[in-house]
Length: 184
Image 1 (cartoon, rainbow, N blue to C red):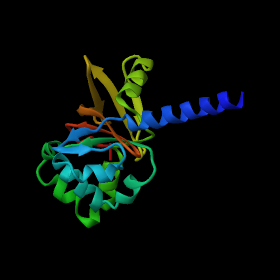
Image 2 (image 1 turned 90 degrees about the vertical axis):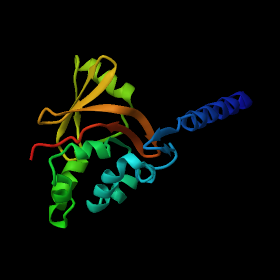
Image 3 (image 1 turned 180 degrees about the vertical axis):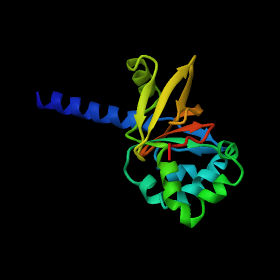
């Protein structure tokens, strides 16, 4: 009996170990995103997220995004930041605008780990829409258009998730094509 219990525990432990090991490495911005690294450790290697990384550093959010989490991050690409009105990024990066920058960045973060399948389930449960509470205190709305996942901000702008389920040691990143903006 003891041997059987031991084997059962050993098999379960091995199974869970392989489940976390089996998370796949995803390429983002020409770099491998390793599931055993945290959000910041991976993001700094993506050539598509240099603006986001610079903003996270300027906002003093590196330690937060390196912490245990877990977090779900909707990560805008450089091209997403380029769609903002001229001078917006430069203005946000000024030291006197740190609070605004922190609000904009944390508006892209949801506490907890929500893979695309979790978001899809929430959308189904919400009869076509899911409301996500952000770390900044705002809300995002997730919805589907065919097989594509979209996130809308409080102003009604929409961001398409272009790469979903980039697993991290402290959460998950979903790459988006538009910067989401809270009502300010």
